[in-house]
Image (cartoon, rainbow, N blue to C red; front, side, top):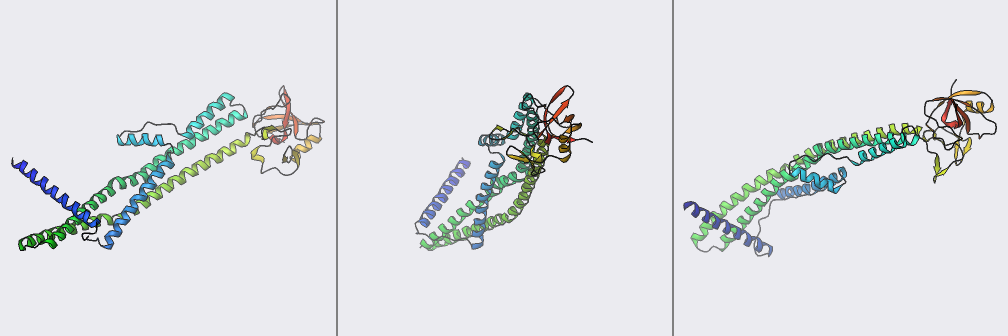
Length: 363
């Protein structure tokens, strides 16, 4: 029974306090009651904390979009995180593209230029996918998690103490109002005592709030270190991707296209991309200009045959041409009346035209 009486009294007291705060707040909004202003330093700290919270949320959300553009995947990860369970591993876009390329290249034939190029591109895309996965993991651990901890931890504590400070301020101003309205000496004495208590509680809560808010500077310093970690993770990722693509570009020097532009097949010699900076103005090939090495020119002017190493893979466009594989050695010779960009190639019993830009004569 005593416990029930205590609970009822406490409930009544809480209800009275809530009503008093509501009345004070309403009168302040209507301009009918005075309001105790916080000191300028505390106001600046509160503004700084609110600004930090707003921009931290925006940066965090946009970083999540950057690392995981798929909104459905982000929602799934969020649900698993709230359930305290590990999200199932999924293939990312570069890895999926890489697998498609590898499968296509395998079906077209690894021995063909296009099939081989697809496989090499696919392998590079999968490596980029792995690097992408590492970037996401590192960024989530070293950058997103600290930002989220601030929003869900430190700032929630600040918001709670700030709300408590607002309530203590309303109690203080309500006590001031009651003191002004007090007429009887006994009532006035009681109001003065209430004012001293509410002022003390307000000052104490203001100090607690101020100490918490001054920690925002430490938060900024911590987030700066996290930002440096994020930049380093991105730098590592882009450096890896650049190196992967650089290696791929070198490999693709041996995978030329038989089409120059608008899918129109050239009547001359296809020029590998890797040679585009090495060839100069000389013999014309369709819309391209190429240079024939002097030793190949000498061979074309003679009737003798020579051994030549194949520089790049080449798929024969028709039955009159000979398909080539990089690094194989074939016999080449000139035929009267043949286009200046071609030689006749011979490999065992196989014979056909071969483009001179794909060859290196051996001594």
